[in-house]
Length: 153
Image (cartoon, rainbow, N blue to C red; front, side, top):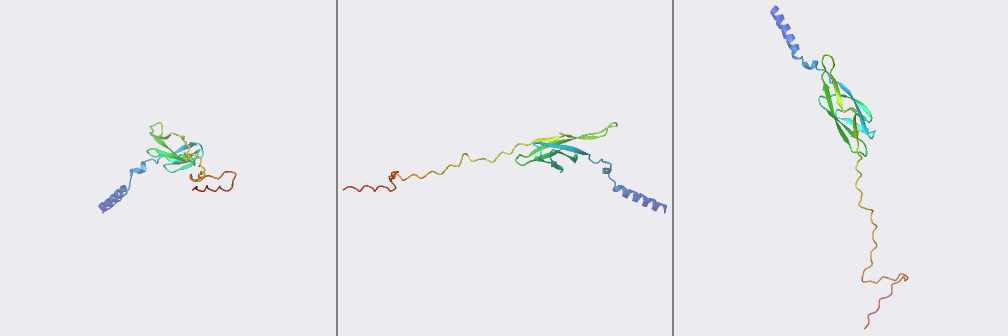
């Protein structure tokens, strides 16, 4: 009977180990503050990680293992995207691990959008039609045209 109990306890303990994972010992990714600014101010800034705001502002992001980007948009200006690097510094016995963002603050200088192309010149006024070459124009002082000369015989 003792063997059956030992086998049952050992089986139950091994079943618990099958759900055990080393991911439980991994630290959660750190959250860092990123300062966002633009020239001119008032642009909508959105990170590729999700959070965004209207500049100047700061957002808290969970630092990924690799970099991310920030896209700035503003009416009448061309959009701009700035790449951001995430630098993980491992700690040692005397200092804790740290994560930094480069650049911080993230600043974008937005360029004005080019205006739509304009016409080459002003709209030309329509020209007055010229009288046909075969007829004579009436003199300026006479409201009626002179009769044409009768053919001679």
